[in-house]
Image (cartoon, rainbow, N blue to C red; front, top):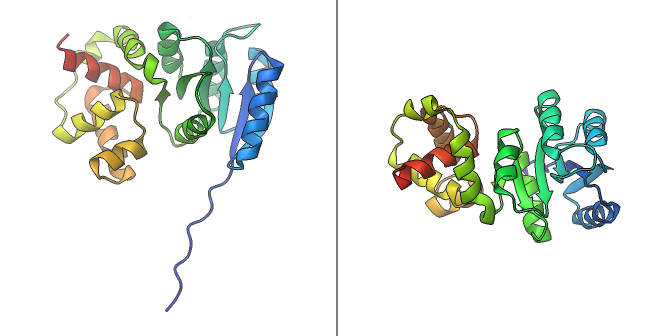
Length: 224
């Protein structure tokens, strides 16, 4: 009997670290280098250098602070994702600012995390954004979704159609900050099925991002 072929090993995630503090950059690099699943391909201390490094290195993920000395990380994020759509930006900041969190998601970021996050949750968040998910610190989730909802096109909200019960259950867990893998485990589904439900929900809600769908769903549930 022929032995089963093992699945191909996942290639290491290419990461660019952007922070204006040299000690933070060095500390993150040292921790991440020990993990083995992620390769730090470069670091930068300003928005301009982040954009240039992203263009040169083509990382899978840019781990970036919101506040940089020359410009905002949000502006750098917009420029990076507009030129390199395959590159994901994950913000790691000390500031619990719901307006900034909403702005980063509208700017095309993959997520917004606070710097007191543990190392392993940070690694899981980096892996999740590579898989196309949006990650938001649970403390920022509801305030950011409220702000994000207020910025959405009201016409798009009115044109949305009814979600199926399973699509609603999936979005309930998205609002709670769960990843696709966690949702699949909770609902006893495959991650592919969860992605399909989310794709259908996006179409019905006329949105293209996970955070936008969660914002509309939250407002619907509250009856506002």
